[in-house]
Length: 505
Image 1 (cartoon, one colour):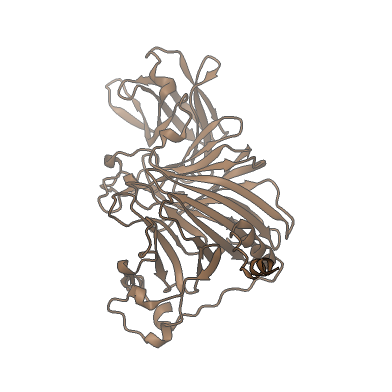
Image 2 (cartoon, rainbow, N blue to C red):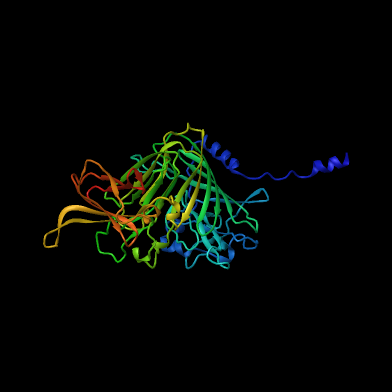
């Protein structure tokens, strides 16, 4: 009996924390009326300018887990400006959960003058993950969670560019977009030998809640495995899953209106889709004069993403922002996603400070309020764009656009009011072909365009093929759609180039 008594008095082992724990919180939240978070910032922090907010720096010697033998460390963002509500950040250690308390001593406030007592009970706006990705003795920032449900990740030698999000609601809808917010995080304390970091997040918004599990794998290409479970409070107009947000100002297919020493300026150059039927689609991005939404109906997609094709520094010539080092983001679905569409939203922007590109998966149907929607995927952050593609195929390396012209008998080129498009195809499926291979472009256009030239020729410089199109738009107030792939007999050798000439261009 004594032995039994001893066993009975021993504490029960702590239960492992997992997605179901967060999902229970999300389900309970969905059953309640949404409560908007209230700002707790004093005026000197809520009204500060960006330059003042930049003065608030996390002290490197205060990184979380600095005393532990793990390559992963955490640092935190301070509240300020529009980051006006705290995000609760918890640590999971030994199966137990404890909040990481706010500590102003972790920050250097520069020359800012403020009442220290008024800010001692603030919180964190978000966090960063540090890891020696570029050198054994460095603490490189590889992941950041800050603002709404946005997060960014980089691999070795990469620079921050486009962002991912937990959820997008009613993007580009007349009702206005709703921005869900990660309100709480749980981060597993990594073991010394761990090469991955697990992060849980609870999402909340007026019409949806969600539970997320992110497993971060640092490396030459960073990989994030995402498990998610969503609950709607009520139906929404457009549900955007696995959303990506980027920036496109100008590029080869849309040169700048004013001369610029930077030939291209964008975080991503196009949308790539791998459809369930194995078709590959490439859609170059635009900075349109009017809001543009493109939809690609797909059943059980095998992948989609916003890619930065073209890694030569000479394409960008930007020593400060290094657009040549910014990663592509590729969504690889886990399991069948069913029927739906990959949506591309392009928003006009006058400069590079605005993210004006959004891509996401929109399912054909929505769950009933309170019912779960599970979605799992792997998110790749890479500079190896050919590695994302079918190795036996070929792809569009670049799209160039200019005013169309016709060569006269005296060899002088005379503009004729048309638009010229140059499309360069490259890849393994083309490299082994002789220059006189019987390739032909399989072209499709909508009724708003007249094709004046459609010629294909071998490109000895790239061992690929160059398509020359010259088109005349009938109604410039309407966008114009074109699609083309290269075929040899009955066999399609390349991805489909799906291009839109924006209205009023």
